[in-house]
Image (cartoon, rainbow, N blue to C red; front, side, top):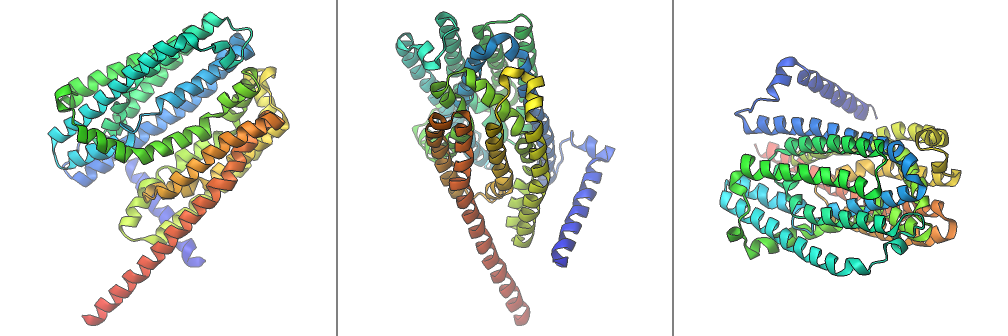
Length: 489
């Protein structure tokens, strides 16, 4: 125990020393100057990316919180429920890259960049962009053919929202989604070339512009179509500006050309991206399916109550994710050095720190949730006690499992997360429909917590134990080889 404590204290001292070094004015200035040493240059870019990412994520959370009082009071319960469902649908759609972008494109472009093969990089970029354009055109044709026959009022189960207003809002939502499909490659390109900080800078600009647009529309009590047009339109315009900067200023050699499209590139992107796509869709099922389930079972007015409570109660998990995310590259480095003792200690310390920090905050928020929501979103958004308890249980599960997720990601062990996320998503949706019909909003929240406990927790713990068992074997083998080598000398 004393050895572990000593090791933990020494790790803390080293971390404090490094932070002090980074806070030195000369070190801060060096972050904005390219370094001739490749290793130092990677650290420099990683530091800037992490800082920009933290700002972007904090701003995203702040905008999410600010948007509720801005819109809920003038839209009314039913319109606001429809808006939340549309927003959730936009997140579903915008995060689906069909396996052609995302981490798949990052992997192949990073490989081409490492080989300094600009021709291969352009072929993969062109193949991804033009394949996504073809998909967008097919989606547009399918939308135009089916849109007039969809009873949108029945889909959203609304009675006070005029059918024309609802149809226009849905049409704009689908139009902006279709436009965003080929634009999704930009973030992957920045990441592949270790310029993720530029992606985050554009993300900050998009969030700020969206907040301004939201304030303007709310100020003039805009309709649902105007709300969609202001937010999605703003994001699309800035995304187009980003693409222009990307291909005509930053990476001119990547400019997508139809003559550079290669079928083998498209096939490889699909093969590499399939597993990431499964994880992506599973995560959407876990975190974004609730508004649609509630709309169909209980009506859009209940969506407001659930989403507002969820935004408040899941804040501790969001913040702990921001704090523990830097462990991902640290786990990868320790694995490369075969330092499994540090990996085990860091995982244990991160889990204990997350629980020790998160549990008191969860309890405090659970006790204060009703008065906070009453002031923040109004009396109509106040949930009952059972919903608060189930969301708190779900949040606790997320916090307990957070360090394990960062460990598996850092060590690039995706089989366990893929299986657990898929089963958890199916459980969240299936139990959500079943429990929602049975006990209402609390049932949807219960489905989230039960699915985490039944599917996510045991699979993740099995994957973590398996990793540490393998790490222990490697450490023993390395020690034996070192001892044998010393004796032979």
